[in-house]
Image (tube, rainbow, N blue to C red; front, side, top):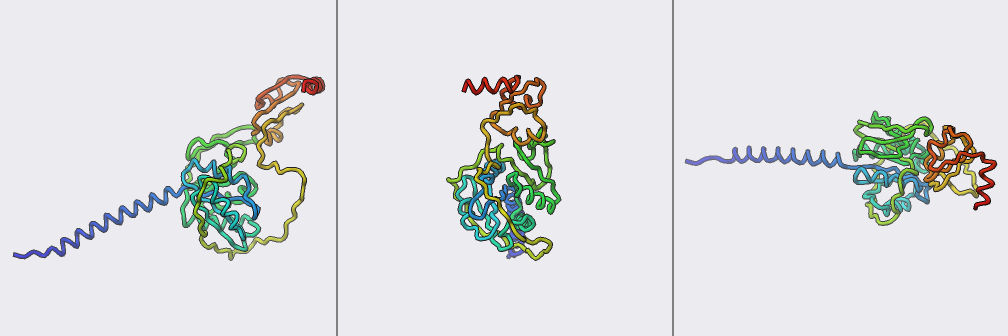
Amino acid sequence: MEYDYSHVIYQENTIFLQLLAKIMGKSLQIARRFTGTLVLAEHTNDKLSPITLNAVNAASRFGEISVLVAGSNINNIAEQVAKVEQVKRVFIADHEKLKHQLPEYVAKTVETLQKQCEFDYIVAGASTYGRDVVPRVAAQFDSAPVTDIIAIHNGDTFTRPIYAGNALCKVKTNAPIKFLTFRATAFKPAKESGGSGRIEKAPETDFSFSGVEFLSQELLKSERPDLRNAKVELYIAIGISGAIQHTAGMKDSKVIVAINKDPDAPIFEIADIGLIADLHKAIPELIKTL
């Protein structure tokens, strides 16, 4: 008696293929889930902004790091970023529309890349650039960004200042895609060497929408150094009470020294060293000692 095993073999192959498809599907899902973090590089067309290095270091808590460099004729920037420690991939979006890095065009570029790569985190430095771009992209994915982060507790919980820096707030976000900006003074910069990131072209973006146009730009030249990303080692507040608008700009200093004759002055709440004294008497004595 002969038996036809072809049908059985076909069924077994079908089951095998179904199992294989499920395994591959799960693998793809895992791959998407762990695509890691996209850092938005800030630059001046010829030089990488230091705040990007701080953002990369902060983002290293979330796994593999990819960086998007958007602009025009920016191969040199992409090469700089590829050498940064911990950077695995560098996406380069080179287009004439991105020459002046208008936030509307940059945000569209990030949105297009996110739809293809499905990153878990999209982050930038807490600068004008980051504040312009990140919320625009977050809105397209129905998410609320967490900005000005100064501490990372875990993958979804962060600390950020509120009320112009007069209070700190611990925030937890349940958003599937987390959009974040980090204060440069709160995180050390990543090393500019030691990395070997792979450079690849970002997906093409449709810039056919209207409503925004670059007209002109005027830059004021100054001999004063750029202190936007500077880390103040020592700050001496002399006769300053500690109003909100003042402390917001100096509370990230490494050491704060306060001199004030009012023992209840708010400045003493954030000062590392405080001296209750009349500045007109204390400062001459300090000068003599020095």
